[in-house]
Amino acid sequence: MNKEVIDKGILDVIGKNSRFSSEDLAAMLGTDEKTIENEIKSMEDNKIICGYPALINWDNTDNEMVTALIEVNVTPQRDMGFNKVAERIYKFEEVESVYLMSGDFDLTVIIQGRSMKEVAMFVSEKLSTLEYVNSTATYFVMKKYKEHGIIMEKEHDDKERMLVTP
Amino acid sequence: MRNPLSEKIVQIQPSGIRKFFDIVSEMKDAISLGVGEPDFDTPWHIREEGIYSLEKGRTFYTSNAGLKELKEEIARYMKRRFELLYNPNGEIYVTVGGSEAIDGALRAMLDSGDEVIIPQPCYVSYEPCVILADGVPVIVELKEENEFKLKREQLESVVTDKTKILVMPFPNNPTGAIMTKEDLTEIAEFVLEHDLFVISDEIYSELTYGTNHVSIASFPNMRERTIVINGFSKSYAMTGWRLGYACGPKLIIDQMLKIHQFAIMCAPTTSQYAAVDALRNGDEDVKNMRNAYDRRRKFLIKALRDMGFKCFEPFGAFYVFPSIKEFGMSSEDFAQTLLNEEKLAVVPGTAFGNCGEGFLRISYAYSIEDLKNALERMKHFIERHRK
Ligand SMILES: Cc1ncc(COP(=O)(O)O)c(C=O)c1O
Image (tube, rainbow over all chains, first blue to last red; front, side, top):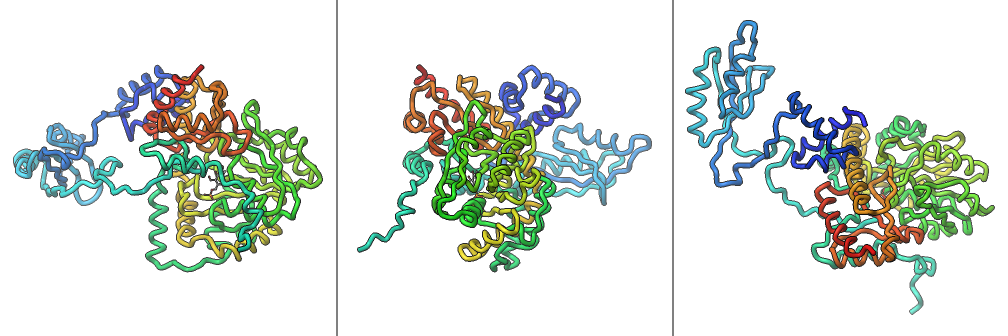
């Protein structure tokens, strides 16, 4: 079978659930384990597959965790554009995501911290003091409904397929 | 009191699946590979369109044949998918599922004593619907060694001068068999030679793996003698919406529409609005679901073969049809014992015709996780029962 079809198949499956074994993937895609392992390795090397974190809803645990979305305006640098500033920002461990945006501001920075205070400290002390960062606007997330295509709450599920139908 | 019942109806056997369903539903925490409907929810944009139509107050009857936009979308779909040209005005009408269209086509075409060739194993409704229409069902038994495809010789051995209709149930429920263009050629020739008509139930036409579905109506001179039945249940995961359609020559569709007009009035309005969106914007959803089914299909066949089941590779619908002959049990006993011992429900092949004896219908309209779980139980079972 052709490599592109297998790669796409792997990504479709593990994009939703990365816990399938190579053996399962091989069965689903009609190929052998060796091929699956090679393809995954090569997609990891090429940063097509960038990691396998579990999607956690911290709200349902006893751990305190707050998320904030920060709009950042920066001055692009000669020859580097926004990349250099973005790098200075994404290297912080607190930073979950950084996106370059079109529109009124330049970067979206998503931060997770243990408390609002911790996040506020990060913004005022680390982020807004960076050279080339002109302004920031911070929005705290009140509740997460859906992330990475996965609904974060228990859904009231009283739909039921009958067990046997023609 | 006089007997209130029609002898004709009393004579019809209740569906074998019904019986099994009653047993299964008695059993607490049974799991199942027994369904004949998608596990996916209807894609949200389609559901949303249904909700929107309700918000807008589109709660009236539509015209008998269905919404104009929907018939036009169906005509476009038939052209882009199967190269079939139908006039939305008179050659297409919208039904309450493919089920209604099967019944309507038979009733519109049969006179008392006309014979209808039905290849089995097949979906449960053709035979009783033929009887309801005063026709005579003539069964052709599809063979495992032919991968459950229909062969011209089989038709030759049953055709008589009373034969009027051939039912073409492909892609097939319960076997998963498909008929390719090459397979269909000799069937179309036979139909033309014997001046027969075809009711082609193509409800699973979107669910073929590796090849695209070919409609027998697309063969030369076949369009005029074929009723193509299709619908939204399987391809768009819309079973509960109850929506299907029939396409065919105006001569026949006119009469089918008359039955529909008096017995049904029109298909559900909300579903029709949702279906317009399905046909306009649903190609990607269909593709994604097809890919998911295909992965489950491969996974399931491999797992069954690894367990030692003899199982031909089906390329359509969402069923596999493994043989259980080595276990020396009837299909029904096997299914019943499997249910009792492992609380796993599958459908005995005999629910789809006597020639389904020796086989099970196993559905892969389940997530891989569910399949794995069920296969574990199956494995325990056969290890215990293998001779
Ligand atoms: C082969 C076949 N035809 C027709 C139908 C009827 O489907 P619906 O009435 O939902 O369109 C089914 C449903 O299981 C089927 O398997």
